[in-house]
Image (cartoon, rainbow, N blue to C red):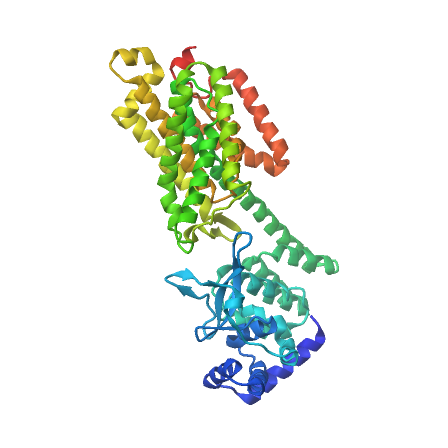
Length: 544
């Protein structure tokens, strides 16, 4: 940090104590910024700069960035931009800069406006230069969390403790636990770099270690490297190494969680595919396109319902199931019903259907679309520091578990499920006992396709919607079905989780492509010894 800035800031602190501004006068001064004439605005700004009051920092920051506006008798600036399609105006969230510094909402929805719709409050370049000494500190209390976090980290290389009082003052109004940790890390690092007392240094190293911010390992390693050989250097190196080991352990848990979420997606796709394959002996290469249909259904519903509402996603879950199920019903009645127990012909026919559906989606929707993540599923759950579980992936895991339970209940606790299992095991005998096998075929295809569509709706939470997205997962889904045991639900669940885990483990050691190759090699070797999978099911496929 430039030494001149610290000197000027110190003078500002002294002046502020002499002036002794109270809260009421600050309110009046802020009001003059947008209600007074140019002279009044300049004078009010000069006094506000000398107060070093963190409550007015968002106002000063907006002035410095030339982004201070008036909206409905409120003093606002613009926050994060709203995703918009090509050709549309850029819309920004509105952030009130004084007195509360919060994102403006209406009916619990964030207000977005284009800057042309707002009344700008302009200041001259000379006025903005008055703010220069405080610029390094302004974002410490920014309404935007990313700016606050970055503002704290910029002081971590400093060796002058003059910045500490201002950082401590800003931390008193901080509410975000992650940023609080970064702010404390900044204070400890500045004091450590400035300290000359060995005992104090050791205590500060302990404080950094216990706080464990995002840059602590780097801070301790850099500090140790700059120290001469001795006890302090060894101690800092040891603490940095301990944190590195902790990160390694947490990385394993993070990979396990990622494996579970990937396995959950594979399970949802493979559940329906497993039942269909076991029932009809059909290699349905169009099954991945039901996932794509579910994703595009979610996209369409998002565009039909009000854009400010998150209701679209919750509505799209059952609708995606139904729409994909209807497509499955149509394809079964028009094509697949003539290809039962004819694997090669069904493979070629459904592959053709797959290509047609992909090109149809590309013609209607284009190459790339996206679905907005509902507010309730944004962010992550921090179980322990540096172990974040995203809410969207937790939802996918929960949805997959719910589908497993519902599928189990349908197959093993209902009359329909008993008939499906009977037809799977022996179609001729089931027909002799009065079961309408064609009706069971239709219902099974509807349910299996619907499950894939539901998986597609869930997939919009973690990726873009593209026409060939189903083809990314169809091979993995067949691997899940074959290695778990054709027609066996429990085998699909176990195999899906196993493939998800192994994929993430291999990817952590190798590149993604090589990880996929290793997965294929493992499954090929496995099938040499267990060609019917882990849990082979009795049925027409198994008997052929």
